[in-house]
Amino acid sequence: MTYKIRYGGGHSPEQWPREVVLAPALHLVKGDLATRL
Image 1 (cartoon, rainbow, N blue to C red):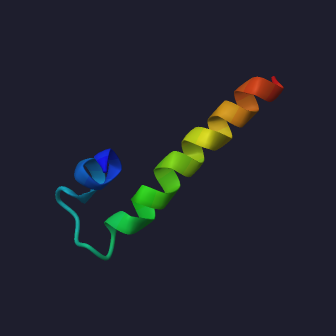
Image 2: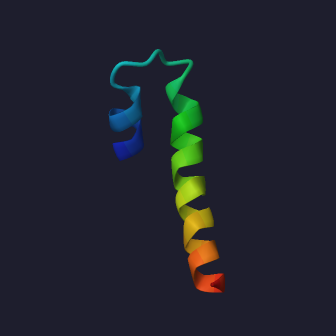
């Protein structure tokens, strides 16, 4: 829900779902890379 509020503020409903999906995914990727390093 935080992502929806943060990225959905000034964007149309057609744009924010992509951010809602990418933001947690990028976070997981960064965490995965950190653990591998």
